[in-house]
Length: 315
Image (cartoon, rainbow, N blue to C red; front, top):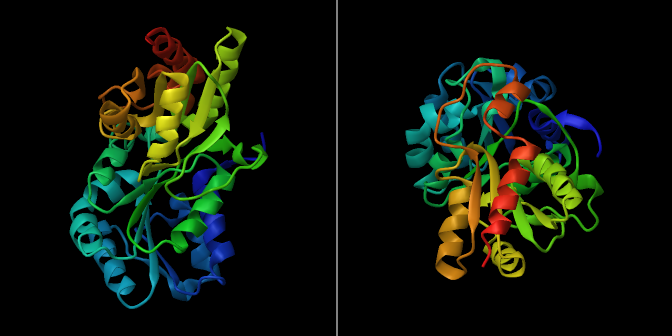
């Protein structure tokens, strides 16, 4: 594994690195630049950075307006506020007219840790995925985040991207043949007995789970499904047909996110056992991030246990 960096930090670096290449890029923040890591862009390109204060709904509307003038706005705040507080404006001001605005929600999931349940947004995948025309993604590491940021700059239309607070190990830069493309998952490890489809920091957990399973004689395929919507149905179908059992894993509510997307698709075309691993429809709690994740079973061991159950359910 490579460097350890939070996806929010990699995103902040990417904005600065890409600014000259994309002069249309403008960045908005809602008084959280130090946390969302847009502070580097603010310092390097002050004329293209707009701190809108604690007014997320207004920020969304202003960014929508600027997109109609040829700019490429990226709006930034915590996932709880991006997907929660300003949802109506995201829906009606950005997605309904299909404007070219990227909504970036930092500090998603339980790994926000001590900030507690009010800020541990586990519903954002479901909320954003339900909006017609909205692309939803969550890169797993620094390398993938940099690639995703540039991909979004070249993508015309609304999108939601979740960032994480914790530093995570970089894994995608060592995978032979790895290529990032919006709407296309990546097979990181091949396997024949069960497939683990992961998103975000759960990708690293899934890779560790595959090693645990290998020690028990179970061959697990691992797919990095960085884009939840549109789902890479071709890759999901191939995994279902070839391994016969699926586990989805996400640092989010199992209702409405990656697990739901996979189940909805496979139930229509290739019904196989699918076990959804994630937060089981309950709020988070305050505590150090690793302990909170462990309390909710969001671990490599938790994924491995689900994989064994899924494999056992195969006909």
